[in-house]
Image 1 (tube, rainbow, N blue to C red):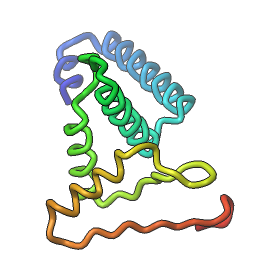
Image 2 (spheres, rainbow, N blue to C red; image 1 turned 180 degrees about the horizontal axis):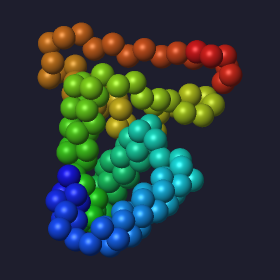
Image 3 (cartoon, rainbow, N blue to C red; image 1 turned 135 degrees about the horizontal axis):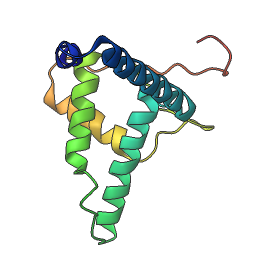
Length: 132
């Protein structure tokens, strides 16, 4: 809508040129994201890894870079997202199945103490191509 309003009074040829450039950029961005294999699961996996790294650094007495978000904030954001959206996420990886660090354990503990509804964790385990 904003783009339409910005381009409303311009020359139609110029508008089409800008729209074509925008379309090309969107296509390139889509291709790049497909190559990076960015999913919701991998996003939260990275958040958990950052949180665990930050806690490990604190435990060793190291100064945490200011670029790293506060671990309580990361856990709170994940808990809020998981609780309100009810969106399934793959959290166990590898063989044997494991979750990286304490991130998920601490989030689940906090959720259990904050909310009075029951919290269910469902694990479906089977061979990779078993159409679980």
